[in-house]
Amino acid sequence: MKSDKEPVPGELTSRVNRRVRFGVPRDIERAGGAPEYGVIVDEIWADPEINRKPPRPSTGTRDWGDYSFCSQLIRWNNGEYSIRLAYYRRQAGGSIWRYASQTTVNGDWRVIKLLLNRTLTKTSWFRADPISAGNS
Image (cartoon, rainbow, N blue to C red):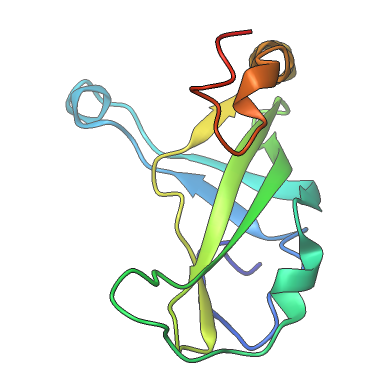
């Protein structure tokens, strides 16, 4: 089974059925802990159109490339599930997408749902100038 972290040339395709490996924090490793393994069983992309766009030239030093954001449902080898918020990056002028969420948000569905629902209540954040809109 292929890994979710393998570089993707050209179009960024579905990561479903890709193997996931979460490395161990050093303190847990020293205590005898081991990496966790699972499989992406479902996903949703914020803007799937960007995944199909051809590479484009860089517009300058502030152009960090293209980013594609997704949510992924992971089934772990122990039978549990989690939801990961992740992103992939293609450098400006490049043609290869790379997994870029080495450290990311991942958790039980209850935690992710709570976080996202609470984020959505911050209505002033979803404006061009959230500071002048006040805190809501």
